[in-house]
Length: 404
Image 1 (cartoon, rainbow, N blue to C red):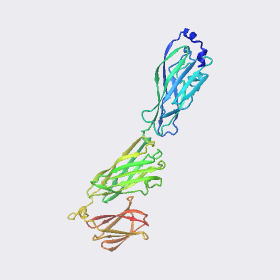
Image 2: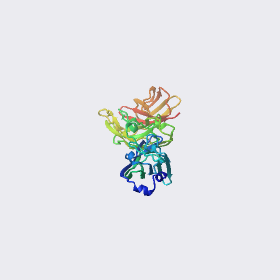
Image 3: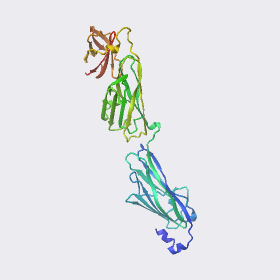
Image 4: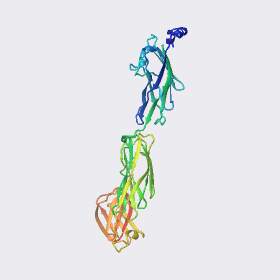
């Protein structure tokens, strides 16, 4: 640099006594949450203390960084809080292969000194599409050439790192839970799959799998009406239902803005005994670009009261081995249904919707011993409904669809 020539000829410089001094150089680090919007930062470039007696008048510095994750501007910020602000000459070049060449000097030959302050700041940004995976993005001073009365000898170059991490605190923890069910003496119940803390965290894809305890109950169907799954914002809705498992994958164009019931699940008991079983969440995942740093799930508890069996009579399960021929004819104009159970004397009819809500019955007219016309108190909406027919020594279950 021009500053070096002003100090005198090489011969004159050689005659001067230059004291050697070790120099440590390091770069600041920065950290971001993956959900932070603009990941732009300033990193300080530091050295060990420089005194007035060192008579430092110029510096030649090269920096390099992980170009797959970071980028830096052709800029060295020498604000009033930096040692570099004492230099009156500054030149910064960005190298084609990724790096900066910073030249600092004082044409007045006024010594530069200081401690506890960075030489200058460099301004960069994260360019990785989602997150900087381990190892973090690095930036390093590859060489430094200070010039002054003291002969500086760089002994340690400590790189800086830019980390983009996923926060695992409760604010960034998503949950999928199963709200437990209770059969009482009914054969069918509905349980709800619920999301917590997915909204507002860039979640637009939810994948899950559920497992049933088929020794006591099994999956019948899923009901989307009235749940998040019923939203029109989904572009993909894949559901596979088998008696022992349910798998689902929902993908939306934009991030979820609500939490709550994701899906309702219809289950049916297999026996008349009382039991307590588990409905297990075997898989829960969201899109990799979400802000969530942790996912948890909560299994559901399925409970059932025993179904009473009259002494000296055939048990309900035994009676049901020969399934009744049950027929149901909905009348959408009158809000009624006609039920026929061949050979079974119907004593009670219970109707409930897919949400597990019992429908109030206004009137029942007997056609014959095994047939009834059931008039509902209100007009049912389109959907799946369940009927339980109780006879003297048996219970029969039937599903039907009401379409206007």
